[in-house]
Image (cartoon, rainbow over all chains, first blue to last red; front, side, top):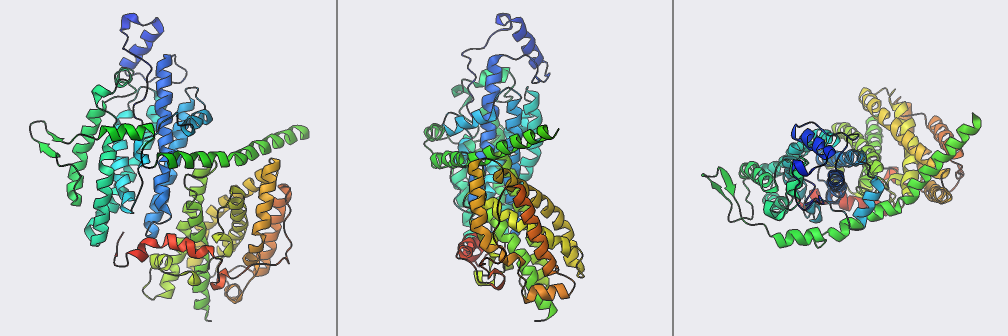
Length: 331
Length: 254
């Protein structure tokens, strides 16, 4: 789940009667689970919401490389280093793939990236937390990729065709990352020293709540969700997805022999789900606004990379123009 | 120096150069000039570290003192590293990163191309896989050298400065020592004379297309990596790379 609180621009839902014929036709297609493709008519709000959501998702893949880049140079074995490098490479690939899906909607990649650098576009709040020990590379894979998968598996059925297809491919790789991340933690818990086990618990303690925040605010605090659900951009609500994640993660946590920093967490026989404590929503909104531990560094690093790389991209464009000119002259 | 000692030494050179350049490239995570480059840089880094692992595993078998590939990477100090000085130079701006890659790739490509025919079967097998990757690396870095050299005024200036800056490390690529000679005589390593010719031939050709000038063959050259005398950079690279195994010596699994 790399998109949180995506603005839809609608105050209330329209009934079928209130819709124009085009809108009605579109909505009936969505209701019939027919995928919307780039060349199909779509409401402006649908297009804009998708651009916001897919670009957030793409930005998250790219910004998400930074907390891992913090440890790739310090990976402790050749195997772990190669795995982490491959994971980072996959994420760059996801970013590119998603930007392409976004461009099918008429958006421009450079413009959307500029919005990110100007602080106008969001990316997942989770990447504003620092990675402080090696076990974070396991915990990020397990919890962060895990939370992402819960959302993305559902998004494979999202109504927009190119986004849905991107999700199918991305989910396969994310599942692989999640298993790898879990294995890092499991190996340390089973065969590691006490210091290594402490690293694992420390990583989980720090990342648990931020991972739960990835699903966004409560449903009743999520004004845009309803419209997104009707458009079938979103398929399940924030709270539903969060509950799914917790239910599937706690048994894995117990298998590790670790705990989460939530005294209220317990199995509820009646509900058939885990109960859990309240998220610190002030922290969530602070991070979203830019006041998280690493917001400033993350955006500054991305901005610097693109700004300082401008001459490289310009060189490529200039060279291509010269080559074309030469080819034309020769012809 | 027996032939096996020479081979061990030679394998460590190949492994260490791949490893340190892979490490340098991975420092660029999230910092490349375009998303496409993030992908390409990490791809090259991944190939290099993968190749390094193959060379280290063979070296560890020959050395046979209980150290495995990981111990060779994470528990040797700088003076025991045998990488070329070129690959330990900092990323600096992207022109330096590109020039470093290009000079290395030309050397790497011709070296591996020759190692494919090595009398040592294991070397030939590892090289056969590696040369395919190195062919792509060389094509990519050559293309960037041309784009920068024949791109804008600024890019031309930057890549020319980078060529000038790094030229002093190129001598080590093509100046054979006893180990290189021994490997050639054993039918394993490339003919040093041929390698030198090939390296200059390719570098001059690409530079000409890129409208760049290259330094003199007899310019002063900074050498020493192959015998463990490095620039100041390597110690810092290792301090980062080896941090965990050094800080937690009792940890046997990660």
